[in-house]
Image (cartoon, rainbow, N blue to C red; front, side, top):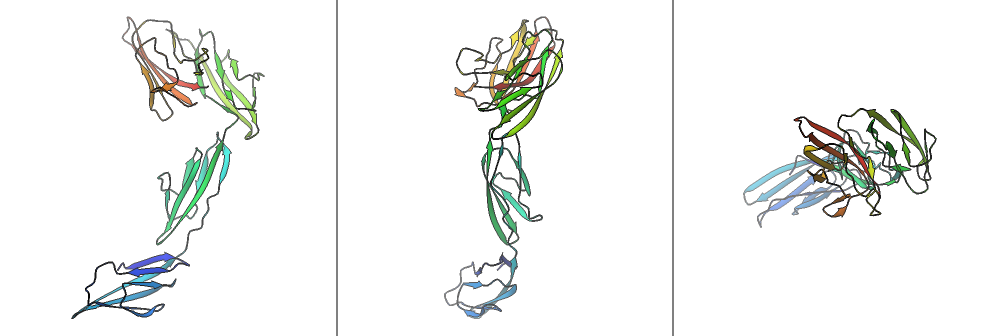
Length: 307
């Protein structure tokens, strides 16, 4: 038997002989809460801290063993169902500091950070006492999506525009005074946008815009809308030079490659293996070497996919 048999307060525990016994073997259990019990492989003990003794007799052989029965306090269930805006993250705290934790996400810390709608459960163990608690977390759409924190334009770019996608029923206001989802920028600086929606109230986001002089210009959009309306359906850079080497790679937020091409005429249609990609912010990386040069330039940034 184990040296210690633990269970939760309020429960009953069974102590059992796991090994096979000979046919003529007899058993004798002794304990404060059970008294004396004969000829059984399993006994039930109550919620008391005590020592249970076992004697097994088989012919001339006698075996003695014991286990200490301990009662542990039951961890308190603490998780709550929560609804909040998509733009925020939620920290789930299982409390019960010092105990053992195992979450449905595979994490083993007392607190975890979640950002997606799902049911999250945690198993809390206090020595021999284990409980499970579950929280239903729902993330509601925020006022706007498609925010890119940093955008860089070349001074020679004709259309220096930044844009967001307001969700249904959302009003927007830029610090320029515009109420349109798309604005044209002319100067360096931080452009903030205020959104107001029924689910999430008033929120403020910002986009940092940087203008720079570029040698061999490559115009790269910060958003596109692959909805087959023949307007802005593809993502591709506008090239103004000839290149001896060119490679464009598109990755999702987990850095999985969803598109790659070595053709200067390559365009991404917003699909991966023929399937539509979700509305998200994607990462692009464009490597290029101009003809007549051995210097490879790397351009990287983010592009928003809208439908």
